[in-house]
Length: 207
Image 1: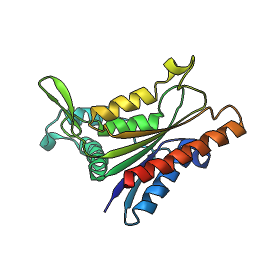
Image 2: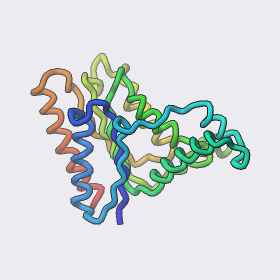
Image 3: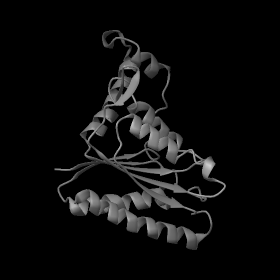
Image 4: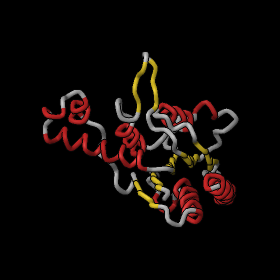
């Protein structure tokens, strides 16, 4: 049985281009794996609490000495990390906001990027502990950032590549939807092209 973790983060709801293309990825993955189980995390509709003093303090406090607030914060992190480890395929939809990822997606990453669980340091070098999984990353952008003068301003894709790899998630398929702010026709064409790639990606993963 295939387990899929499906994470969306756009605050635009049903109008989100990243979520629409990610849903196409998910539909095609399930079509190829009818018995697949899906865990959904809509970080915009159900945002996680931002990392706070209780959580950070808990990480440096022995389990038996943690306060109730600290225990709850660590339990949330444990749940999110358990979902990550249980997944065979992870689909992440990321919409660019002010040149980078949404704060809701950043918070999810803050909870799952955790020393001793998803990464460790061995001989002073980081080692990712989340291995053997496939990731499909769907990222949308209003402008054009894959080339041209705005490419250096893309702090979304380079960051996601790095943090995923840092945790050991190195098998990442990227699907980009860009230029969607340049009119309805260009947005529709960008989504259509991305949906074709979404289907091809799902087919390749299922093969």
